[in-house]
Length: 117
Image (spheres, rainbow, N blue to C red):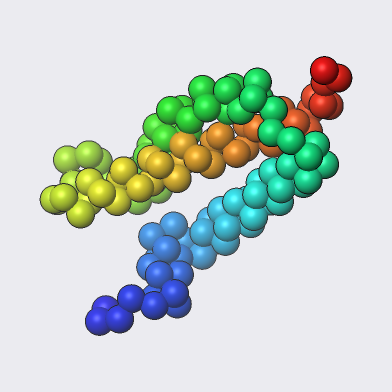
């Protein structure tokens, strides 16, 4: 792998997760992002109460993302080979945390309507 292209990255992720699971994750991420954008456009404001609850969910999302990747790839924490692996796992944790926050905020907004102030 001499060049790091978008197609190469997709091929690596398909190999890691399997073609079906990878594309299911892409579709799920697109749906959650779409729901989040819909809620922001519909409400025309960011609810700080919902945002706080969403932030509380972030550590759980980070841990869930790391555990998910470890389970799917049949790896353990002992398999970390160096600083690059640690950076990748921190990136996975950050993406899981942000994804959990977006999901929780969107679900809260879809389940509960905007409260009158």
